[in-house]
Length: 282
Ligand code: PAF
Image (cartoon, rainbow, N blue to C red):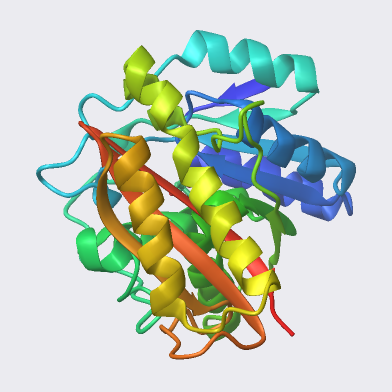
């Protein structure tokens, strides 16, 4: 396994593999890897000849009051985990390699970036789309794998790829959960023991929503009301948002119909956790 820190070197390697007709599979990450990331890597490996994982905590996607400086980092541990999985290349650039001078070019995916997490994290998805576009131009993958846990991000990247004609196939892989249902996230490390126990309520509230839909409830507001009740009575979590949106357009809906995404973000002290499920209603 090679660790590549320079853009030019990564691009040269990508060109070499492409000339050899090798399929490049790519998983972009911010490191501090957990089972969720590893599942994405396994998928990328299965579908490619050369598997590249990037580790880069991207300052562009963090707001000034957010956790960029304290975001967990452990490269030696990540490297061991990726080696075991048989990853070929870790692309591990420094900030000054990715942003050597003031970045004046940004990728903005309108509408899809405006609701859900975009409302509480202005500029976040512009930072994500910009760095992913850069990474695609550096790693030159044929396939890139993203997790459903960041569903809005995945939908935005898919749209960016379509609108800007990137020649990359985007795969959205299922959310990996801890045994009790909590979605794997690097930010779970911020939770105290008590908060960690309480955080299971997030998935429970999503399951409650799904059950209500299965039983025939079609009013999103009724469902959101019950989810809020469950979260606030069973935890100290502060709800940022709970929304039910159309799974393709991410626009809020007045009536549950077709494929919907039930998404939430909840603060447990400094940990802002997100989760979602997709439900196909009748
Ligand atoms: O999902 C993430 O870890 C990040 O948003 C990504 C896609 C690596 C871009 O920095």
